[in-house]
Image 1 (tube, one colour):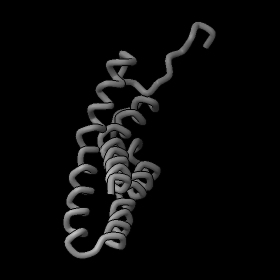
Image 2: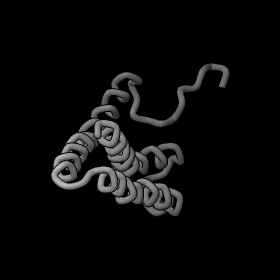
Image 3: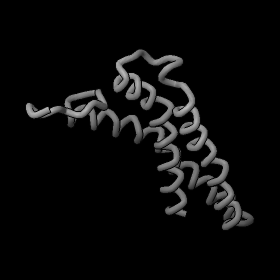
Length: 112
């Protein structure tokens, strides 16, 4: 169950990353504002993939666990996995502090 909790935590982290931060980073790379050009088709396809992973994931615990173990196991997986909603923004903030930047642009050396 801990492995399933870790998998669900990573799914949640990816969903939060795509929903909250990816459009800003793509806009920064393109030098435009977040809007129609940034959110076009590719970001929608990526988001649909991450979101589609959630219902597919829940087929595994329900197949592996039965009876009272299913109730407790699903609750544990959901509780631990939902921490991804806290961990993803915290990692983002830590990365911004470590690199002293909020931009996705690479730091260019004098040879660039």
